[in-house]
Image (tube, rainbow, N blue to C red; front, side, top):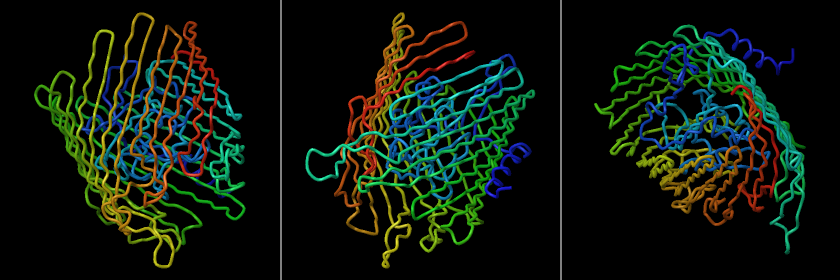
Length: 636
């Protein structure tokens, strides 16, 4: 047997035979005649009171079936997506934090790499999730490591008594970009299962302007070494036995990417191969007042980077087990507590030894509501022990007040943490094993004002925030000129977020619009270099906004989306910046319904105005791109 296949075989055997152990989602038991036997709820809306967050359901995600998570969040959130190009990596930063400060959770488990502390969201297809919840602000007390700037929750939703259902999407467009997303599911009164596949390939041989070239006009060049191939498979099986639910989910993702040259290079032969296998098993038991949950996950990731001088291989494994209990004491009191154990290890030529890390955590949350449910308040706490050493506990206090109808005033205070990564601690000759966790104090205050008339609906929310991060880990050169990480910075981030949505309907006509805006000021208050104090962090835009407007007549829909990102500094002294950019997208779709089948034909024009821009320095983005697609749904 090829030794490289052994970990994948180990995960396969484990996913079929292991005893189910955790759950991050909370659910309420319904009667057997219900089509959806479970109301899926994660901890955030129940015990994360006071947060500003956005929820995208399956209907909202329908327009993004051919996209990845990076493209969804660029247009639906105020998080900054650091995108290296149409086939490059993409990372997130929220509320002035770094790429490691926004947790990405699938089925309640953090899928960030223990080596890098980040998740490449360009590798996560939107067609593999049914719900996305975007939480702004820290909540380590509920979800653990990395939730300082925010968190993204990715979930699938299983429905019973739906029989056979099929959903398919095929699309093609500019730069030989084509792909397909398929889903086949079956369910009866005791079983719900599905299989999803995703494939995408592109040449990405787009034209761009070389802004670094001498003279004018600037020459137009053709991008090279930029091919992309991705394949994914997601399998789910859920069994309902009276008041018990048992489930297994397996997600395999494979990607091959050529890495194009920067504007400072003439050519490149670099390429990268990514593969991941994620498996989750769970058991849930529902009674009238209690939900007992046990769940376990095993994640295996591999990355191979190759160029003329390097052939680097790395693999990491994460094993997470959790048990928790939710007690609905009465209409006004709820209690939630649990235990979590996690194990992480990695193999890399950059490590002298094989690092391992054991984490154990005890967490609890309590929620109280007033008699008329005008006030809701919760307090949460989490104590985590890392390799036998306890860290400072994470604590959160949140509340909201319904002061007039559905108008709400929200407040949230929390203490959060982020642990050093394996690369920070153990990288050969450069890692620093003496690093301590980053800690933050987070606060936010917001107001939510919905208006609802017979044919119109308007929702507005305004949130102000302030975060102070201590022991910020920064890689910087030492006296010998070697770059090493140290806990040397303190960062203060503050700003505001505005979210507005509007909807109206008249007979066969419909109109909807939404807008999101964030202002972020994120500066160092303590630093190794005094000259950087008071300077905006690199790749942190002061202004980030997006919006959309849709007009629908019967089954014909026209949708326009626009995003704006202000200038970003690319050096710590704030002397060099990338200019602001704004990008528009237009989509026209026609739906045809025949009995239980729905066919959706769409045309999409991305970067409508041909904006010439860079999100990351020296990485040009493509101009206009077109996409044609067919979406077929049967039995939905």
